[in-house]
Length: 139
Image (cartoon, rainbow, N blue to C red; front, side, top):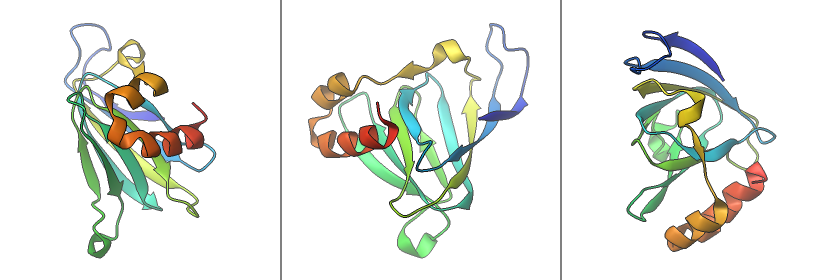
């Protein structure tokens, strides 16, 4: 992950925003995590990215960020602050070059990694997808 824009110093109070690029491959999936700020994923190149979203109210969903609009993919995905999420390239895919825009800028101390057992209990309808994403990320 590389920060390509950051407004203001990284010290409190948090700056208004930051923009990052990141690469997801079958060997380097996005780990289950959450940050306190809203963020927008952007798909730049490569294969579609499956994104598992686990909302704080117990709902879960699987979204696909990619370029094939006719197949229901979208080039952007809003991830509300506090939502656990993870990304993986679909089976057979090679890579997804992505970006994320974050409001307010988040420091490493603001990233919370997901606990698979706890999230499976709080999102039982997403258990099979959690297992799939966990196996991809080797949580």
